[in-house]
Image (cartoon, rainbow, N blue to C red; front, side, top):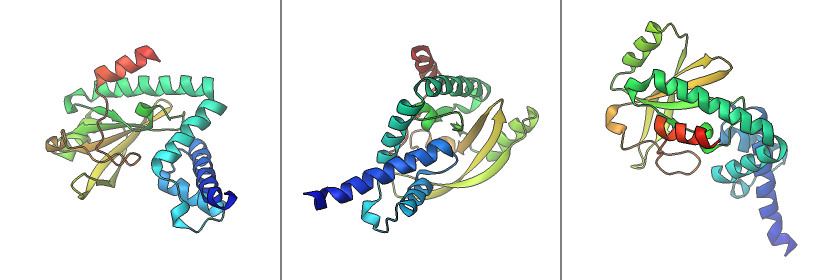
Length: 201
């Protein structure tokens, strides 16, 4: 029995270690945190590596255990920043995705919004018109039809929070990329849905 439970215990330990790393360095992806945690715990067996949803659960438990009051306040402030950004970018039908929506965010977590526009330039021009200094990068997204596509992300700071704008074409409004945690198409939240969340925080 101990031998059978040992791999499961190691997998759980890696998930906890990865969650702690993300709590300390929110710019780490789940994959990066998992690899760092495995290295720290000297695990070389890929079968023992936890899935993203296991790490997310460990992160949620970590934040609730070690930062219950602070995390709730930080999450509320992040969601308020998200609502302000969604109002600003309302012409692009924004949707909130990621940890700020799911509730596993802390003060270092960026607010991630999906914007819909058939031209990236339209969003870039809007940012310039509003004199918002930003950075631009490309990310690879997975879709349910097994396609992998490069999309543009703009990032900027609004007060203490980082805002990330993922630009998708209008045609993908009903075919969003896969959630890296769940492996299912993301749904995201509209501004009205976010305001409902804020009212219940």
